[in-house]
Length: 505
Picture 1 (cartoon, one colour):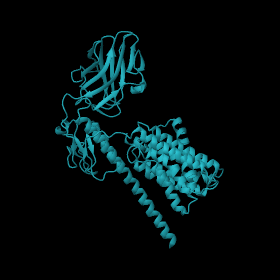
Picture 2 (tube, rainbow, N blue to C red):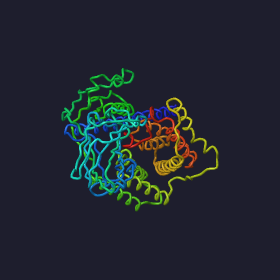
Picture 3 (tube, rainbow, N blue to C red):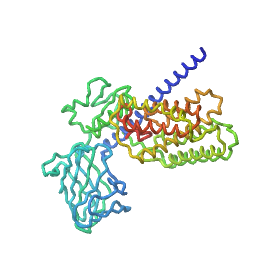
Picture 4 (cartoon, one colour):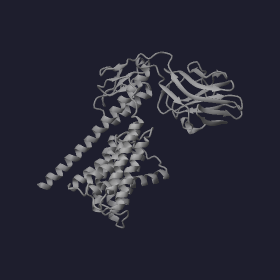
């Protein structure tokens, strides 16, 4: 009876943890959507450009280069481009998200040239779409410091010479085509899209306002029936359904933005006020990182031969990675203090493990059973892929090898460092396994489905490690399962393998 009660308690605790991870994922995702909506509302309400490009570094251009016979140099006042032979060259403006060139058709360029020239444009709505060009959209003189181009008035043609419609929603490519005399120099600082009409958006949106309400799953699809009234929207307020999962909210967000890139997308029952939420001040981020590094250094100096304070060591090792991942500091704008804290946690754990190993373990094993048992999640991943996946995509060999190393690092940190110290506490082994697996799941925040899958998989690998403490079999099983999921499952049940702020891309 006692064993049955313990098993039931373990199962209940596991189910609660899985539900908590789904709840955490939804809470973080709603917070991100609210943040994005505030930013978009403030931009539109204040009449600021909805889409703009700062052109200061090579990385601000697609492929970090100019397409054509021209020399590119990054200068303090912008990108300086010198034509080699007078033929047209092109500058690719990164399109990280859909842009609405129908409602924001005024392209403003901050630029200057030492010669007169001509600017054209190229757009392609999607990867499979047809490229359309307007080779002589506007002219500029040496004295000009800015140029505004009305995309509606340009003469658009396809590659075969036939006419093209003026651009609407563009999700793939937007390029500037510039022609100046040979050896002439053009310096460009930025580009922005503006609207000829003011957007009638208030400074605040209450919890009940919605131009479009998206229904819950199983109800008629409001996005599939694009009415004439909906077509005239430039920046509608779109309300997501109640109780939607993180994956469902982001999927609906992407579908909405494919039709209305400037839409204000809000979770159910959420009110907002227009505001530009500033990032954490750099001094505060660096200050917190410095305190964390000082704490690790102090703990390293006070280390004894045995594990005296296992909970403190577990917290010290886990804090850095959790700060980077769960703190949403790993994304398009990577937090340098967050990366330093992540690396410092691993360095601290590594030196601690080298000075005194809490539990015995090794990298390799010659027993075939030690290699087979950790592979149990692999057929589970295969079943999920068959049930809800797609055709396997090709993964580069370098990516596979890199992920194998990454999996080995993760399993070393979780099983040898974290669980090795937890086993010096007075907790029962099932609780230790749950804590280890939970921390591993939290390191994939806010990707809810991935968090749940990682919790279950790490629970199994942690149990296998207690039977046979060999790290390479765990890492190989981890890498094989994750790569199979990446190649065949991502896109529906599992949105992606992205974690931290990368999950929202």
